[in-house]
Image (cartoon, rainbow, N blue to C red; front, side, top):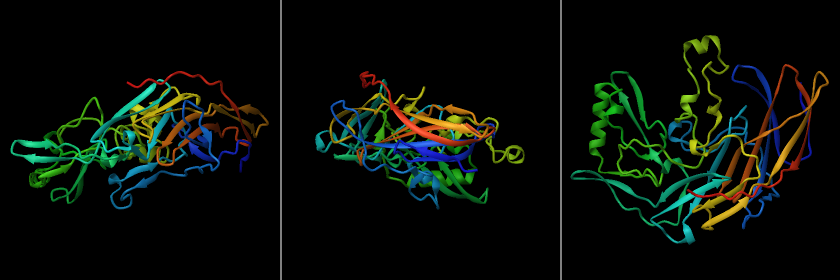
Amino acid sequence: MTVLVENHTGFPHAIVEKWGPSGEPLDILVVRATFDFSANDEIVILSKRQSPIVWGEEFDGPISTSPKRAIVRCDGDLSPYKPGTDIHVIGTAQAPGGHPHKTWQAAVAVGKHCKSIQLYGPRWFRRKLFGWRLEEAQPTTQVKLDYRLAYGGLFEFESAAEKRRIQITHPGNPAGCGWLPDDRVLDKYDRRTRKKVLAYIDRLDSLTAPQIESPFEPVRHPAQHTRTQGLGPIAPWCQPRLGLQGTLDKRWLETRHPNPPEDFDPRFFQSAHPDLIITPHLRGDEPLALAGLARESMLRMQLPGWMLIPVAKFESGRVAISQPLLDTLTIDLDTRRLGLVWRTSFSRTDPVREITIGCSALPHAREGAVFV
């Protein structure tokens, strides 16, 4: 039966049927609001043009032919639940002052939560007499926040023993650059495959090096064991998300499919970099600061502080007020806009029939954001 929604906020919404971790049917209400950047610690400005609901993940790269080489350009809005708030920063970071820099540090802070990254111009690993050497970066005025420019990689080969093409991937970022598999990785494969991979690596004399890394754990060698760094959404086939999806085995197919596995972890729905998943959820009135990302070297603003109030009427005649959680904040540097997504769910044991959506303002807590 159709749910009648009366939306007085002016924000796009969707209500869809999903399934919870135990396979229980739920009606999920999602509301997306779009705001323009402000400055000088002012509250962000409601956009005249509201962005629509994103009905599924949007990708860049060869998603149909080699999906692991693709990245998530924009996360979808229809997850059933997120245990915390995802912070996504997308677009292109601008060098301080608009002048070419070889490297600079950038950071995003929401309330008291902060993440820093180190950005570089184009650079390469070169093979020298005694091994790989990282060359100095070329100056640049901007770096795209793209996991293809972060540490990682993928190698694809024919395996004669397994009679199929196999992919050897960096678990955290197959789309990335600058990574070479070492013996610990190659020991998982047959002798012929290892020989092919090592022969390919021996022929290399240069390798694109990452332009995005941690300022506290810089990448210095192609076989380094380090976490991939970035500010945008992570693909579901990348770690750590992949390890949260549960055991998709024959028993699952026979006894639970299409419901999630018994060991499914709802944190799988969190697509932000682990350093940008905020728990408990944001209130929505926190200060936001960007350093080394926008055309201003430092940009401070305040989230809008709006609380959504859906009033639901159920089939039984019961009426209840829900409390949607702000579980996604997207900061788009190119459009200079923010996307805020709120989500709540309704059990179908007593199906919801009507929803009226309103909103009210939260008191603004002006706590300073501190960069680490």
